[in-house]
Every structure is written in structure tokens, then in C-alpha cells.
Image 1: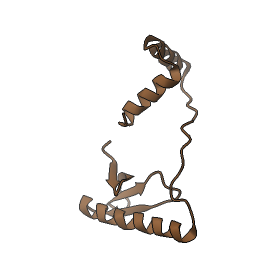
Image 2: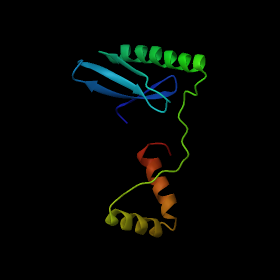
Image 3: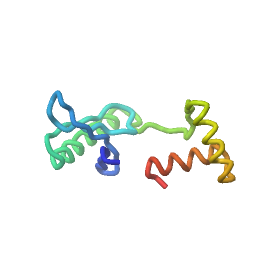
Length: 112
């Protein structure tokens, strides 16, 4: 994905902020906000490292778990037409709808 940056094994979403005319990064998967700004990619990496370390240090000092936990379960609402098409695609692949959705998400999220 073009707008993700990996900093010390942590992913951050990167966007251009027109109000500040800077690049803005925000770490995902954390139990709180950890964002950072810079006007170029090299400085964004440096600022990201500082922001991440500050966040982790504060969590450690306060005894807070820094990472979100994901159960692997979530509800998805789609149109009846998409539901029917997905069910048909799963049946054609001889797998459950749940497995078909999981595989599709793996590919879309570039995991598997």
C-alpha cells in the first residue's frame, strides 16, 4: 500500500496535510494516538521513530498496554447482491463463505 510506512516494525498511515503543508504519519495498531509530521520522507522517518519511542515510553511508565488486540472477528455489512456473489464465489471454490472472505482480505491487505 502506498500510504503505509514501516518504522521499527510498526506501520503508520502517511497522508499529506494541506493545512500544515506537511506529511503526517499516524501509527496504527496502538492503544492511543502517536502521530508525527515532516516536510520530507527522511525527516518523517526520524520523527516517526521519536513519536513511537515517546509513546512506548509513556505506556511503560503508566503500565498501559501499548498495542490493540484484535480478536479476528468483525461484522461486515454489504449489499444483498455482494453477499450473493460472494457466497457463489465461495461455493465455486468449494470453501465456506468465511474462508473465502478471509482469503480475499488476505490478498487485499497484502498479507498472504
